[in-house]
Length: 311
Image (cartoon, rainbow, N blue to C red; front, side, top):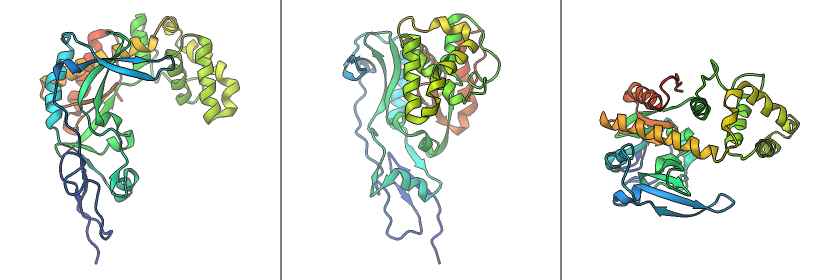
């Protein structure tokens, strides 16, 4: 007679427990849950500047001492809520558990942070995305099993965020439908073209980066890199002039971080706890509709004439 599985829960802030027919099984963190290194909330540490070397590797991170902007002030009440938020994983089966926890310890990394910080690159006002919570380091395949205070969660993200931002900056309307699905080219390569383009200083540099990626995963496509690139930007020619004019990626990250802060302001005002992952957001499942409304409202506060899509 076997043991009936009632549920399987791996706790981050509390007890980890389950029932499973495997004999003598003890889950990670039992019986007190996975440990975290709690740090006191210090307001002046909510803003930071990252300095990188010529290779893009972080050299150091320093505190930015200035008053918080109106949007940034949401980090104070939100971090207070995140500090007490109970986060667990409600796993559906043992194989999912085994994939991420093994030999009695977690395979996850960087599970100590529970405070969000706005981090600029090089100087104040450049980039500015939100970092610091351990959930942001959690693999996307595992995030779907997160629970907040024992309730299931949902994650929503903006569709084609950076392309929409480019159209917003250009004052143009994007084409109808999927912005990556056209020209009989795999949409993942279309997405790669955008990523390589906004991170490059020139057309040549972007194509070289695309070829390098193709060489690693699909060498036969390398000869098509330039034609793919031209096909993509012919379709989106209205925003091509936004590229290669100095830190395009930083401009877009500043915009998406501003939209993230505005989204968090709306949710926090309605007592909804949310963890952002750049252009996606995690809330309890019961708040999915409020999250989508907040995301669209935040985006339209910067670009009122654009209809943004939520995935």
